[in-house]
Length: 389
Image 1 (cartoon, rainbow, N blue to C red):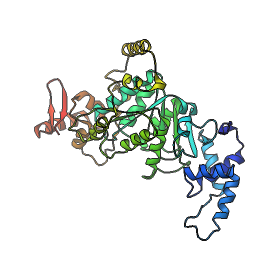
Image 2 (tube, helix red, strand yellow):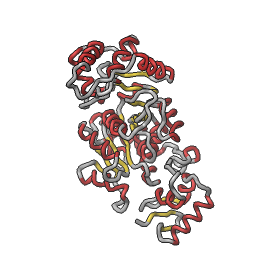
Image 3 (cartoon, rainbow, N blue to C red):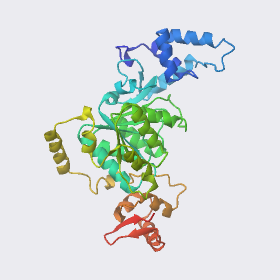
Image 4 (spheres, one colour):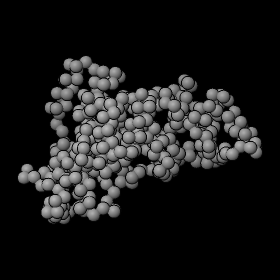
C-alpha cells in the first residue's frame, strides 16, 4: 500500500497509472498482477508493448494514447472530480479487500465518505409506492444514526433511498457511466445534490455512456463499499439480487424487507429471507446485526426516541418538496398501466398517488374509477386503494 494519497502524485505518474488501467484487455485482476510483478506502471506498460509483438497472443493490449489520457484528466479536473488509485492510501478500505477492486475510481464530492460506515439499499426500479415509502423512511432513519446510504441512482428504490439519506445525512451513489453523465437523465438534479452532500463514484472514464455490461461492475462497486445490504422489492433474477449475492460473497450481512407473496416484485426479496437474510422492518434490525455499528442499548433507545419526536416532512416524506419521488419511465405506459405499477397489495392513499403521478388529478381519479369497475383495484372507504393480483 502506497502511503501517499492519489492527489499527492505528479501528473506524469497519474498518466502512467491511467494508461495502464484504460488499456484494452486489462481488467482489475490483471492490473493488480502487473503492478505486483513490475512494481510501477511504466515498467508494466513496457512489458505489455513487448507482449504485443508476440504473434501467438489471441488478444492484443491496445494501449491508449497519452493525448487521450490527458484529455480524460483535464475533463475530470474541470468537472471538479478527482481520481483515486488502487493501492494508494485514499482508496476505500472495504473495497480494497474484494477479489477484483477497480483500478481507478473517479469521484465527485467528498471522497472521505467512501470510508464511512454505510449500508446499501437496493430494489425494484418499477417499485410500488409502498416500497418507495419504506426505502425512503428506512434510509432517513439509518442516516439519523450517522450511517450513510449507498445505492445505484436507479429509478424506484435506489432513488428513494438516496433522497431519504439526504434528509438527515449523506449518501453514496455508484454509477455505471462517466462522472459527468446522469442516468437516467431525470436524476441529474439528484446526482448533483448527492455530489454536494455526499459522493458520486464510478470506475468508468469521463464521458463513458451507460451500457448493459457496465451495470454488473457497478453492482460490484456498490457491494464492495458497504457494511451490509438491504433489499426491498426485488424480483427473481433481478439486478438487486446480484448485488446482494456479491455482498454475501464479500462476507457482508444481507437484509430484506418482506413483501406480499402475491406481488412478483417481492418474490426475490422474500426468497432471500427464506434463505437466511435478516428480516428487516426498521433501522434497529440493521444496526443490531453489524458489529461495526454496535451501540449500547440506552444510546439506541435515546436515538430512536429522538427520531420519533423529530419533525418530519408531511405525509411521510411525500410532501410537495419531494413531489414525484417515484420517477418511472412513462414513455411507453398508459395512465392505467402507470397507476397499476404504483400499487401493490398494501393499501396506498389516493392523495399519495395524486402527489406522485405525473398526470392531472381529474384523469387519475377517472382512471381509478374505471380500474375499480374492471375489478383491477379495490377502493376502500378510507380513501385507500390496493391492487388485485
